[in-house]
Image (cartoon, rainbow, N blue to C red; front, side):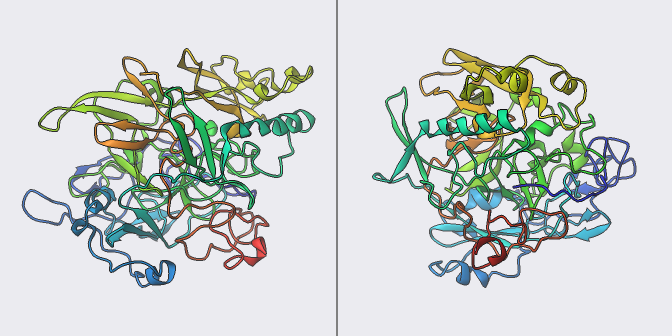
Length: 531
C-alpha cells in the first residue's frame, strides 16, 4: 500500500498513543473498563462492553454483521452457514476474534462502531468485518479512517500446496540488482514493479516459489500479494505484506519508521513524510490494515473483549524487547492467514505436559537477516549512496548526516547474521525495497538458541499445537509467504471477498482513482485504475 501526500494534522505528534492527546502518553481522564479488564488511565474508547454467557464460560460470539446475504454473491459455492462452534475447527477461530459488538471508537471526533463476526460452513470460516480498529483511531498517514465491509473466507483445515505447480526458484530475488542500479542513478525514482519477485505483483508473475532446504525438504510456497490482503487480524482488519507501494519510499518497510519504544516522537506534524504505523502495527490507506503486530493490543479478556485500551497496550511497544526479550508465557492468536493457519504472537510453546501446560517457551526469531541493498551490486561509486547501510548507530541522525528530513535511512533494530547464526543489532537501514534489503537464511537444521527458535521462510514454525505463523518485530513481520494453499489470496491486482474499494479523496492512495491497480481493485470494481 502507499500513503497519500495531502497535508493533514497529526493528532498525536508525540507518541501516537491517543487520538486526542497531543502531548502525553495517556489520557488522564479515561477510566473506562473493557470486558471486565481494568483499563483505568488508558484509552479514550467511549463505548463499554457487556459480559455475556453463563457458568464458567463468559464468552459469547459476536453478532454485529448485518450483510450475511452477500456470502451467496461472493462465494456461490458456500454451504449453509452455522455458528462456528458447531463445526470442527471453527471453535478456535471464532473464539480468537475480539468481541467488539458494544464498543464505540473515536475517529477524530466522529464515533464509529467496529464489527467482526464469523460464521462457518463445513469447510470454511467466513470472517465478516467493517475493517475498523477496536481502539480509537490514531492517524499516522493522510488517509482517513473509513468503513470497508469485507467477508474473508478462511479454510478450517489448511491444505498442502499440490505438486506440479509452476514456481520461481527463490534465486529470482537476484532481480533486486535492478533496484540497486536505479538507486545509484536516482534514489528518488522507484522501479516500475516490486523488484524482488518474492511476492506476487504483476499479472504474469508466477504465484509459487520453490527451494530445497538443508533438511532435505523440497519446499513449495505460495507467494503473498505485494499489495493486498494476506490475512485477517482478530479485530477483522486486513493484514498486508512487509512493504509499501511506490510512495513514500519505493516498496519499503513501514516498520523502519517506528520508534524504538513507546513515548518517543515519530510522527511529523503533516503526516506526509512517511508510512508510519500506530503502536499496534496498523495504518490507513483504502482501509485500516496491519503490517506489524504489538500483541498486547490484541489480548482478550475472558469474555473475548479487548483486554486493554490502545494507550495501555501501546506502552508495550519496545522494538528491542519484541526482538530479543525473554518469553515468560506463550503468545495467543492475533490473526488468521488466508491458508487457514493461525498467526500467533512471538512467544512459541514448544512442549506441553500431560495437563496441557506449556513446559518450554521460546521467542520466535525471523530467519531473514538485514543484508542491505548494497548486497546486489559492486559499483565502485556505491559508498556515496549506500556506504552507511548496515553500520552501527544509536540515533537516526547518525545515518543521515545530521538531517533526518528527506533522508533515505533510519537507525533500526534488525536481525543480522549468516549461516553460522544471528543476533539483534541496531544499524542504519534503507527505507526502500524491503524485499531486497533482507535475505532469507535457511535455518531448517538450526535449533536456534537457548531462548529463541528460528522461523521458516514464511515466518512460521511447528510448535506444540502445530504450525503457526509468528508476528515478529523484524522482516517479514507477519507472513513472508503461504505455507499452505490460500483460498482468497490476492495478487496481481485483485482478490476475493471484498466489496467495492472506496473512491479516492484528495491526497489518498490505495483507493479507486489513484492510477494504480492494487489490493482488492479489479477491472470490474475499479475500471479507473484497472481497465
